[in-house]
Length: 264
Ligand SMILES: Nc1ncnc2c1ncn2[C@@H]1O[C@H](COP(=O)(O)OP(=O)(O)OP(=O)(O)O)[C@@H](O)[C@H]1O
Ligand SMILES: [Mg+2]
Image 1 (spheres, protein in one colour):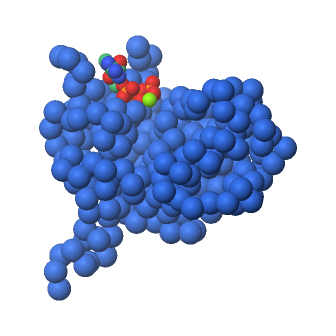
Image 2: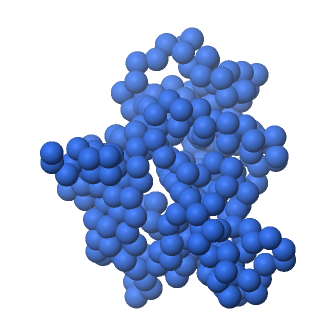
């Protein structure tokens, strides 16, 4: 049997990041990061401010050209075939903004069209209602609350049924209700066969929705494991025990491995 058909073979991987290097001038933001995301998995990128999470996602998306390494999305090399790779990706960036003068109905229609989706006025209204924005159809993006903007940008990120969804800090600034709703949405997407890479600063979120997480610091990947596996593996690490305030948590492991210093 060829290695591409095994359970951990290439066909089972929806994303391969191999030796990724991203530099901004002389500053190295991503320094040889390697990880794989399996099909149907929710994968979390954790790391302090400036660790290189957004830069990694930007390279996966093909928004910036890495100085080294390789990114393969659903079997497609992003650098060699950016258009085909991008068609398989849904992206919600850390700060998304849309054409501020358009209504949300117009924005959804615009993006459906850009992605070549045939949708009727009714389809658009249904989708907007599905994310709880049924009463806001005629409102402009800039007049929506942060949580409403977030819901709309997620709707647009998945409008073309991507095989891999990238979410950069999707719940920062959301109230607990909206955060729970987004977690439910992530679980629904996974149940429907979708794969998701998200970044978060919330260890609670990582434990609630991620099958596996990677901890990145100073552009380097420190560990990849399930949240429970990380705790089990590092619960006796002296760096972790120093910061633990009781039973060892994922946050203790995170701070133990990345240090207590505040980043720039
Ligand atoms: N456009 C840019 N030009 C120059 N340096 C940049 C640029 N974008 C990011 N950097 C630098 O690259 C490093 C990694 O930044 P990145 O945004 O990838 O971190 P992050 O892990 O997403 O952080 P955060 O948690 O704050 O979002 C940081 O040192 C940052 O200052
Ligand atoms: Mg970031």
